[in-house]
Length: 130
Image (cartoon, rainbow, N blue to C red):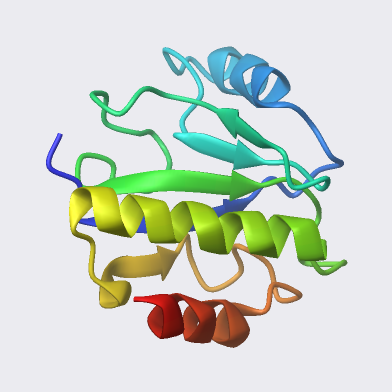
């Protein structure tokens, strides 16, 4: 795959494993989990779809953008410091590996990854390390 960007999501649920999200997605007739990575509240990084498969996470972007999901209800509570740190590090690594520009890192939509997600701080960290 020729990855051009990254889409950041939240699970809008409690802290769940990538396996649990995969189960939910299969119940919705997905082949497997829609995201390429899941970041738990502890900061643990769990793999999802493999890199050579388009995601199933944002219509119109699945074949061009990797999907990363942070667990939690980020519309009600902020992510943990460990999650944000893990997301920044993962994003930097993916940017370097796939030559992704900061302007191609996007939210799933206006309400996702949640109003409590520190988007401006996250993007300043991304651009500073770029």
